[in-house]
Amino acid sequence: MRNLVRTYVIEPQLVFMPFLERVLKEAGLHVIATSGDVDSKDIAFHTPAVILVDVDYFERGGPNAICRIRQAARTAAVIVFSATDDPTFEASCYISGANAVCSKRESVEKLTSALRRAIAGVAGSSALVTA
Image (cartoon, rainbow, N blue to C red; front, side, top):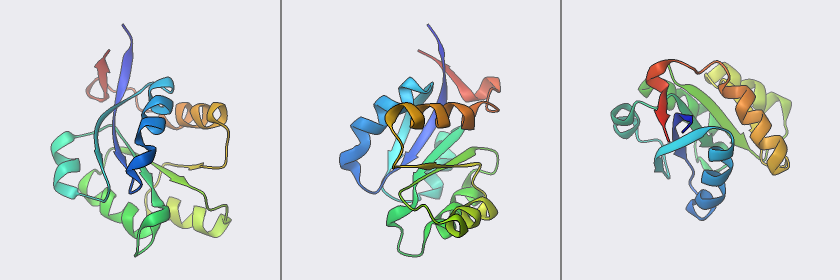
């Protein structure tokens, strides 16, 4: 048995969820809930330690979505997943409250490694589940 971090995934393209769940599990994350949009009530209900959000599909932009997530989960680590490689966009994600920005363009191994680094500080007992 190993400890896995409670993770909420916001992925508008639900077809990618099986792939994401596999990568997240390899990185030590346990998906407790998923959504295709920012659902503040659902996020607050599940109290995740980590929220992974694909910001490429939000009409009002990724930084706006991150701000809405931050309002619902002030202490969760917010990890942004994006195909955008614009440093200004990345900076705006951090300013909006993201703890890490991961590129969709990376290999599975690099993505897994980046996720592990991003959650390294999320080790509180309330964040973990046993699997």
